[in-house]
Image (cartoon, rainbow over all chains, first blue to last red; front, side, top):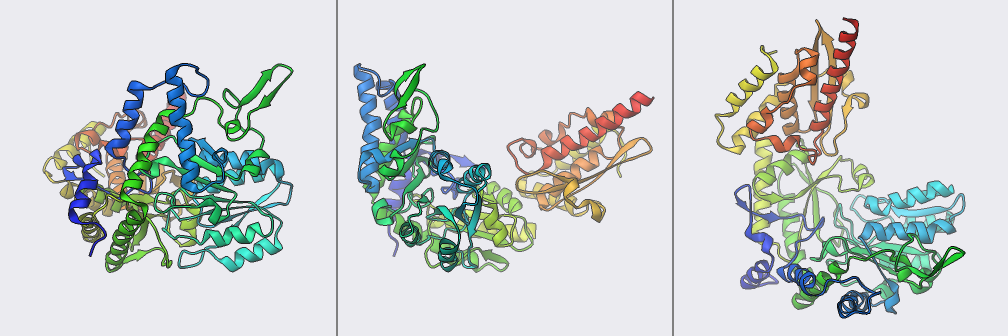
Length: 411
Length: 146
């Protein structure tokens, strides 16, 4: 018994205009939502309508349009604060995406605090966006980035983490909530609690978790959480950084420009309060209009049902793919979300990706911007299929059949 | 090694591919070409000879023989290797100046242009660039001595 009735699946898919197109003469099977998910018509329309009726720069204008645009933009901050259960709206910083949000924390929060010899603890499975910014800042300050090792099943070595916290001069912890390469859901609340009890700040990369589950920052106990709108049926170019207010308040500006200042003169400039201190320049306010619609869509369907549906498809894909001889699914963690990553013995992931593309099936191939994770599991890359609320059983079947055929043709 | 100029070899490939209506047949043919590609010498399947590609790797072994550039190449992915084989077939054994200036329009004519687009991360674009650079450098050296 499926979470959604057939008619509901069809109704949901009908809201996403992309599914009316064909790829290589076949109906599109879009199994790359973990990279960018598709947007419903309501999101496209909200942005187009905003452009047609409300477009004006936010914050500074006294005129009607600017006020309306500001209401949309700042209204999203209120919604995001409630969405994440932040304690105040000023804890929500808008960025271009998860990557920029993490860079902001690396440069503005961590960099001034780092002293030579300090350790930044980062998991072995991180996306490069939650690894490279720390490496750059650490190298500059004579600090080092060390890993929280991953285990064979795709989970993280919690005991090794505790040991590192106890024996190493850890200044900061950065850890993903869900692995983009394997799909593992990590118990980040436990990671945060351990760091917190030692006074060590934690950033959680929520890029792959927030699309699939409600994330409560106070329950999680993190200092920072970053995620992107485009992975949750929203627009590109918009990301969110949650930062605990006292943390944000302690941080100097990172980028300078309009909107982030208090008073500017050649004898000295003072800066705005958080979060605006970190939002130099004109924000992507059109995306804010789209993101409202994306949150509406999520609320209409219900995140628990979305998660249950995705999980049902994911489990079926993992099971079916595993049954193909020569297929190795990476990771066997008890809790997974969003993606299944696999390799086919003797066949290059790039060939499989090209082959599936010819069948109209869009998957991701390669290292998924997580090269240390690939190295950990002894592969140069994988094929990754990822699922969203509009995914179907038929798409899972096409994927599995496509992999079987690829094996015959390419093997 | 086949005979003919670069353009004649391209023409031959275009004709060869004209018999495939189905993409699958075309892919199978490409994979077959890769399988029959003359192997590179083992010491060349190493980092200094690796052409950068994000997803599939390509190794290129260039040489000069009788004033012609000679290429051997390899890839870890089957389809890429087949495309590499086509490039070797067209460019290997040709005069350096001709290689450096070859427009290589045949991939487009056989419906594989997208594989040479810079958005593809298969190493093929970089390999062709390497082949041409090598040929151009040799041609320049020859001409200055010549």
